Image (cartoon, rainbow, N blue to C red; front, side):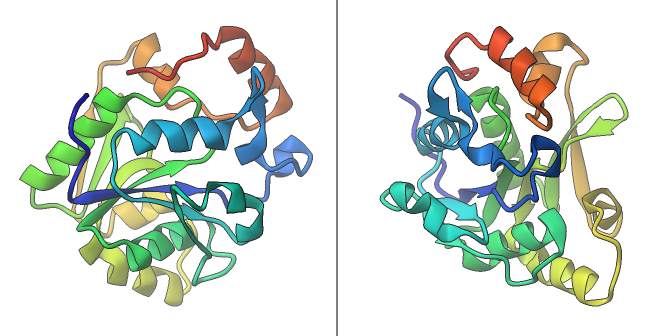
Length: 207
């Protein structure tokens, strides 16, 4: 078993409105009888020493308190940027790997590559990219970018993480454009997505 990452925490953003899932909290969607959030926590626990869940309904996640730190948004209604800011504020590490709560095909190889890059490179964020598509909710954010996130929100800018990334020193980790890599960044956004993902799920996250 590989050693856990020492200087980077993991943060799962679970504060979305879930409007396309008819209000169902995506973190608790079952895939073959196991909630996505449990799969994600167990998976991240093999990689990271510290796991944070950012949610404004912390009581829904009490079952996982032995493995995670539960925290709420400091800036409400700021979207994922607010979640990133909260994670950076509460972590004890130098950086945070931020991931959405509805990605069932995470890859430890890609995550460890990103965390290694964050240690070696002098940049604010490590964001994976396939072609022209980036995934800012599978990215590493250095703790020192917290104030830039706060300033961006306070100044009334839009809630787009992609636009925020243009204001900081972001490094884009280019990945091959293939089905395997694209699968890693799949989200469960709609009931149709869940049907397709459940049909293709083999019971294991990608190692």
